[in-house]
Structure formats: C-alpha cells, structure tokens
Image 1: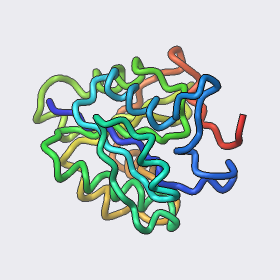
Image 2: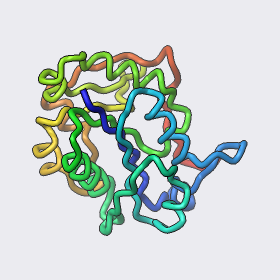
Image 3: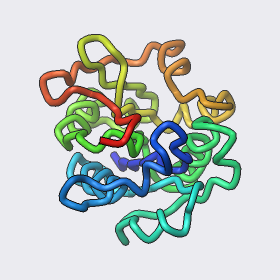
Length: 190
C-alpha cells in the first residue's frame, strides 16, 4: 500500500494573526516542517503541502522531501486547499491519503500509524477506506481517505468546509486517539 501525506497549510490564519504555516514551535521548528516529519514517521511515502498565503515564505520552510501544492484560490477557504491536495494526490501512485492541518503541531506520528493500521494492509481494501481520528468521540485529525473516494470528495468541497461531512455521510471508521494526545488545533498564537 502506497501512502501519501497531506499538510493543509494554504490559509491566511486570520484569527491567528498570519499564516499558521509560518508559525514555529518554542524551539524554532516550523510547524510545516514538523508536520511533514510527523507524517513521514507515521508511515507516509509521499508528502504534499498546500501553500497559498505568503506562499514564497511558506515554501522555503517545506522540507525537500515534500512537494508544495500551490492553491491559487486559497482565500476561498479550506475546501479549496483540500481539493488541490486531493487532486495532487490523485496524480501520484498512492492508495490512501492521510490529511492533517498545519495547526495541529502536537500531532504524534503514532496517531498517523494508528489510523493507518485501521485501514489494513490490503491495497484493494485501503483504496476504499475512510478513517478519522477521534478524541473522546470528538472528530479530529489525522483523517485517511482511500483513492476510490478522491474524486467524489474533491467534487463536494467548497468554502471553509473540509472532509468531515463526506466522512460522516460515507461511514468513516472512527479511531480513538485521545490516549496519544489532546487532538487540539491551535487557533491563536501561544
């Protein structure tokens, strides 16, 4: 099974005071680089990062092992970023896509490994998989989308809506990850 990891990092971060893709941990590590490293350690073979707001600066922070996916209409909302990432993943030879937003810098690679384990090792089954991490029954990230869902998911994305409605409508398997970390995203600067 070939796994592609996607970091959603194209937004402007209005509530945050600027693009979250430019944020850094207290020790100076860029969140975007941390997310790429976490996805690789969790089992992703190919790595993609969506870029939009201040894309030149963000692109400089992306590790060489990941490819930038330019989202020209990033200001239209999360849906455009996710759609661009799904299309980029569809162009690659991957069976499943693992999705994380850049604003979850504390996501451990073990959460990625756990949701991927729920997909199973069979490639045909994996291509039809939908899995979402939950934290005390609250939906969160990472989410896994099998290749057979790429087109339908991308077609339904618009505005600031992500994949949640699609995952619910199609019976995504929920995998509890609350024992690994809080599942919290960061909406304001620490």
